[in-house]
Length: 162
Length: 119
Image 1 (cartoon, rainbow over the protein chains, first blue to last red):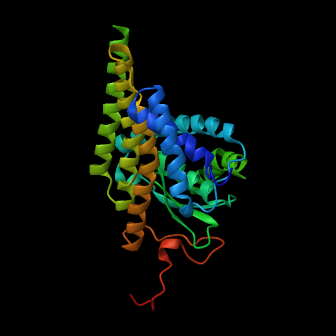
Image 2 (cartoon, chains in turn purple, orange):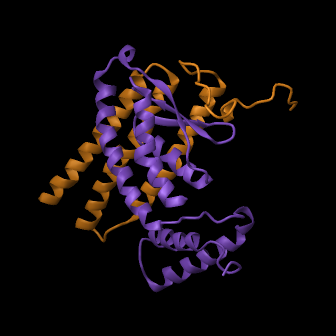
Image 3 (cartoon, rainbow over the protein chains, first blue to last red):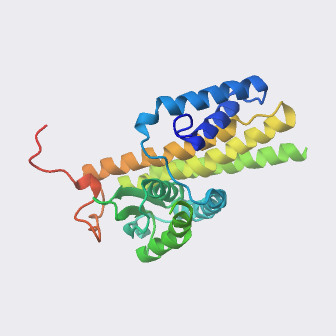
């Protein structure tokens, strides 16, 4: 198992990406995708000593839709801020998010989600990885932004990854 | 007819958010604030345009799922470039407010540069 298929998720992902790149679903495409999906993880296994662990993969699908909904909502508010709010009335500020997550994959997904959601950009991680530095475009109350990130995203990611 | 209206609607929505992103890039006055404009344009703006392209392909041509792949690559790469620009701003101390101190550690990772390290 581990010798032939070091990263089963990566193999599956490579097959799907290959079929999407070719843009057709014929037998030849799937066969060639499977060959690439088997060889690439073996060739690059030295760089991936630990396979990322996803405890509840199906919640990841639900999480994706939560993120899309949050992006839609935040886009509206940020568009209003950019178009109608003068610069001096914008209270942009740094927000420190203390992390409950421990695995690197979960923290990466959280930081990516924060950046994709308009209005917040994750800027840096603290020295030992216990907190995340987030810049908010217009946050009169930085504590509310921190609590929203923790309840909406971090709690769900903790379910999925840990 | 309805399909055409749907495609046009998504094109207009996408174009609107791309314009808002560009306006933000021009209007906002500090480097960290300006960083917010492109992340917004790349998610909903480009997403809506790609959705219009996909509807068009399935309605009038063979159908295409390349757009899903573009979206996936964009979602993976956009946060990384934003993160790098933010790190550059911290290095250049181009932030309008001083950084808060992290609660459990000494410094943020970007500031962790021993002064006596020789290159």
